[in-house]
Image: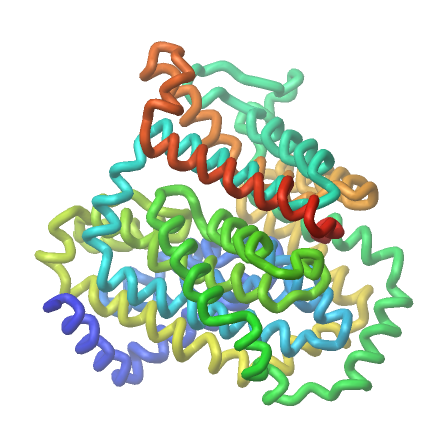
Length: 510
């Protein structure tokens, strides 16, 4: 209770113009970086890290928290307007947001994304403030076999959610897993699948894969329909002049989505965030799949269903609160951004651990207050003030817009890795993803396979090593058995029961 009161009193720091300026600027920078494909909030925080040396630790941590929250919600902007997610966690938002944009409902889609981000981010921050010590202890109960089963669960249910495309989705996921195995073996110093190319010894970085599968492939697809998009953009802007009130979702639509969807998705995101390495992508995937599973009209997903946007955005912003739990209590970063925040703490002589919230609560409380402030105030305020400019992205000449995005994407892939070879890989993977999408293969499962592949392999091998090669360890471990049963439950409802009762069209993922 004392810690909660300390967080509440920390909001007074935001009355300081200097502190408030850094928090707001951090949020705007995080939003811009997250919205531009190839540039992420992680990169923004990494580039701005040297500036934290000139700030006091409290202000630096508050600015980091605002960048973190902005990084999660900012990716929905380009995911909705031009079907290129600015961040991996916004991939599921693109499935529903872009079809709404094509129907002239882009402002409404961004409004739903903002509302979901606000509620998810706010609830995630509140849960962090209240439950951090308890959730941290609970996450320790998930042992190595359980972590493998959890990752397998995330991969399988997303594949099963691609109704009518399950085989193609599984093939794409396997391609992603294969790409993830390229490079040095994590347990034995042996190069795998390098084909004699020394540059592949280091493996393939995540950023070229993200840029290739979404930005480059989308540019190639859009290049064949410049005239059509120009006509459609003019019709959208002419038929529906964008006003700021258009970004406010009507109460009837919010009721249709249901408060339970927001709450459930936020809790899913928060719990996923407490597991180190899970990240916003897994949280949005699971919440989206759960929304499809429980929907009375699952065939409407992939065609512009606001409930999919609400579920994905609520979950990925709630991840922010969850990911800070293992970082603060055990010094284990939940994702790349919290790894950088951990660096800020260490640089300032703060050692994360079980006693941090007790011994140095005065430093942590303002950061959590900034996280909550960014979610509840800055997310809706930014959309209300700048939303009409976000929508006007569609009015930009497509050759200029996509040419600029291509340049930023290629430069972003180089900046993220400082490797010309990885930059070329982004283009090669973009061409591969282009042909996959043209033939109906969902590239979302490819990216998910690549993201989860290393941890999936690592936890599998560790589990078998600990059990002397006995695969029954995944059944005898209660945490692993729980996730296996959960997987079977989801597969039954996604791929077996509902298709028999009410055949649905496949979820559009390209």
